Amino acid sequence: MAKIKVTKVKSAINKPLRQKRVLESLGLKKIGQVVEHETTPSILGMVAKVSHLVSVEEA
Image 1: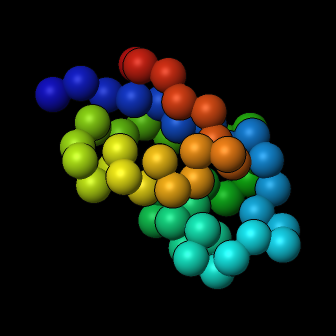
Image 2: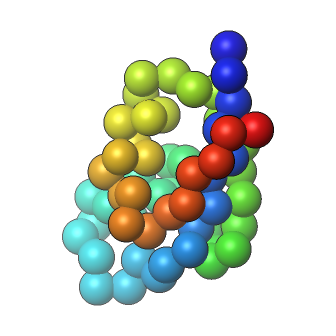
């Protein structure tokens, strides 16, 4: 299965708690942090919910 790299590019301050929890579940804590995930429907859905806070590229 393909992989994607997700980078946190914006802060979660003043964002809803649900979006903060999505970032936590993706494993993103600090701005500039990069995590790699399998391309599954659940991961893609989480990335879509916080697409304004993260940057995505294929790995």
